Length: 403
Image (cartoon, rainbow, N blue to C red):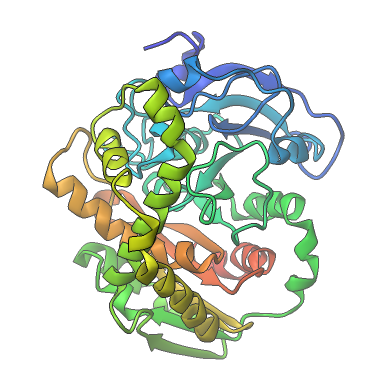
């Protein structure tokens, strides 16, 4: 363990990589008076992002300027207060870090917070920040938001600039954010997605329930979510049930994992081979697996990605919203291992790969699940419909799903 975190009593939640990283806003704006935390994978001038691994921290230099998203938020009036723990090199969705510990999940004590934006989600849930910035490649905003009982968005791929972000798999990497309040989630979107202002004019007319994805949940989560379905149907003119992946959602998930793994090894091979970093359980195995993948063996995966994009564009059009679970069940208990954890991880990926493969915006909304622990109800919209979806969740949906 290193000493970056400081000694503030807030650290009892173990959410911070370094709570002493504070940057004041540079202008007044819509977010004046709000504080935000940043996942420890973004450039902050004068500070070295650690990416959840001490060897990464040791072998990299301080940033010369702020990442694009940090700069935009500071110019919108928000105050940066702390960097947050992440899974190592962002390559997990569980939220347990072997080097820095596991952020505490306030809404589900004794259970994992989800990752890789674990500290960001836990900081918002613990009310240590008004909102937090994270990344989402394969579910790293959506999963921790669902487990920690907050709102989170993975935006359309490319909608928010990734300059100053440590990459994982660039064709899937997105910059997302989390908040306890859907209105604040929307307001942050207004600052980060100002080029989408025109997309807010129309209402969603159709709602599609993803039956093949709902079949992946446990009975408790399905029952909890189904209670909201009648109210959701009343928000649109048409509601229908669909099978998202006609050939099977597991095929989409496997295509996602292969392309992601190829890109991860391409991005980080030089560093891994030069430094031989110490990785925690699970992370080492994933990098070892990624190192075996070859572009020439993956043409079917790339073809399936294009088919998935076409399928989702066809389903959603410019007036549809897809309803699906964010996660299969409540957050697993801490310190589980073995095949049980890996099977749960893969099932979660089956849910999250849809927006990932298609590059679409997805918002997760907290609802109460088994044992009073939170789970997530998700909504996916068409490409570039992020602001429209954020406003719909804040102004139309929230009254129907509000706890």
